[in-house]
Image 1 (cartoon, rainbow over the protein chains, first blue to last red):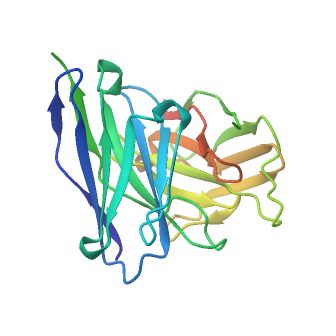
Image 2 (cartoon, rainbow over the protein chains, first blue to last red):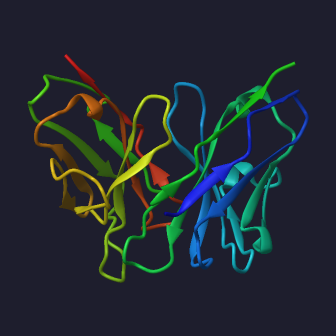
Length: 121
Length: 112
């Protein structure tokens, strides 16, 4: 059973940076894309970016360009999300989710449990 | 960027009765490869989203057959044939046809 396990909740001050990790358990290969999505309190889902764990290729939503960095540690089956220059508007639950390669499913089939990030002075 | 508009935003339903959620796209979600990458997610209170339906009408593993998806082009529908208590939560449509991926605003399903 494939599972994504994320790091624990974070509380940060405005202007700080946060790193959230997402570890893939049970994957026998890296044949998937790893997306990051966030959900502000009482709000909907917002796509942030994507990384290809096998090669490290990334693409980010325009609104996060320059603040968001996704990296991968293939040996540890872990992807990291770094978000800098935090403001209160970054307070949200952050999720990672996989999309398998190919066209068979082509949807976000496995989700992490979510990581709460609170930005407050 | 493709915009997805869901209606209704809130749906009070009687247990055992059907429910329907619409998702309209600002442009066709038909991909040049012949597939349409429209999926539906369920988010129960306090839980991460869960995949229900992919490529318009395919139920994901473990999803009860009371859930069904239909549609084409720009208009899509999620139907629940008989609402159960565990169906309470938020429902989102999302598209992966065109970059960047986008989500509908979400529809809150609640019991009357």
